[in-house]
Each structure stands twice: as C-alpha cells, then as structure tokens.
Length: 284
Figure 1 (tube, rainbow, N blue to C red):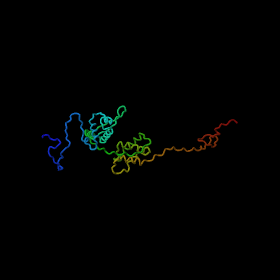
Figure 2 (cartoon, one colour):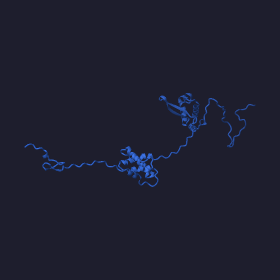
Figure 3 (cartoon, helix red, strand yellow):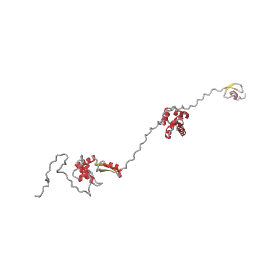
Figure 4 (spheres, rainbow, N blue to C red):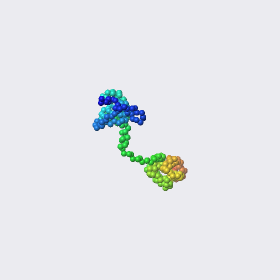
C-alpha cells in the first residue's frame, strides 16, 4: 500500500533528553501570504498583551482597522457584534486603562460639545515620536542670580521735582567722597526719595552727605546702595516742630502827656491838648 496516514509520524521520534534540544512535535504553523491591500498593522504588544482580555484585544484590533470618523460608541459596536453592551463596555474600559483608547471633549461652533474617541496603536509612543521629530532645543544659558530688592527708604511729604533733583545730584556726587559709592541710575532713583525726606526736614545737604559717607566699613562694599538705604532709614532725623507765630504782647496804657493849653497832665499816645482844652466852651 502506498497511502500514508497523515496523522502518523513519518518516522519514529524519541523524546529529547537534554535542555538544549529543541522541542519537536505538534504546534502552530503559519501559512502566510503577503498583504498588498486592505490590511492593518497590529503590534504584538496588543495581540499578545498579558493583561488584556481576548474581547479587548479583538475590539482594539477592530477599532484600529476602521477608517477615520467611524462611530465606535457602545451602541454602534453592540449593533455590530453579538458580545453585548456589558462585555463591550468592559473591554473598552480595559483598553482605556492600558492607553489604547482615550476620550476627549471638544467645544465646537455654536456652543455644542462633542466627544471624540482616539485610538492609539502604540500607547506612549506618539509623544516620544513627536519629540524625536523636533529639532534639539538650544542649550539654555545660565541666568545670573537675581538680586534681592533694595530696602525701602523714607518718602518726603511733598515730593517736589526740585527736591528730588537735588537729592539725585547729592547721590551722584557721593563717589567723590568714597569711590565705592558710585551708584547706578536705578539705585540713585530708588534712594532719591530717602534723601529728599532728609532735605525736607531741614537737614543741610552737607550733613546728609556726611551721614551717608561717615564711618563706612573698610572692606569692599558688594552692594553700596543697600548700605545707603539702611542709613537713610535708620538715621532719619525727626521732623522739625511746626512754625508758630510769636504772640503779640498786650498793649499797655498810654503814656502821660502835658497839656499844651493848661499844662495839666493827661494820658495820650502823643503830645497835645487834654480833653477839656479840646472841647470848645460856650458863651457865658
């Protein structure tokens, strides 16, 4: 007989005894034909996912094969498959938990709100691919450390422009007394109201300059404007007392005068005649 039993082995096989020997016998055999049209590429991370159910893997495969704009809500999928809405909803939750599906809400014209379903054929890879396509960012230049703001300084009660200009001129000349007190325009603008407050309190400009430059520490001043701001605040003199006009003395009695007519004494502010001599006498 020349007919072979297809289920019988062609020759006797013995069971392998070593760990390094491949396992032989029955198993899966692929009969593959190359697709040229109507095919979808599915990654093994989905097809062999260790945590997804078979329903979820099949549903993800079906969704990835659909064209853009297709309806993939539970109602449309239930009408397409016989698994039922409960199993399909559970499978969609599985896919969402593992990043294969996500929902986004978008507001469109007319004030309507629509929900979009986004299918990811390789979760987590879209962001890395997008970042890989971008040109490398230029290296960031190190920023110099920001300086702390200068301490606050006193403010004049009436900041007249002439008073502030006088204060600015005083600050601009401080480096003549000490080269370390060469101030920037920004520092001078911050300190000028404090100097104006001193000048407003009737402190001469020479005394203000002396208060700012006297007994400075001998070591280098890393921030002279901060030292001057502290002195303007800590050593601010009290305001002068308000001006009071002198109280006029009460007027005393008129001095005694001698009457030019009868030589009788009388009180009057200036020499002249007494009252009787000034009053005309009628006919007898």
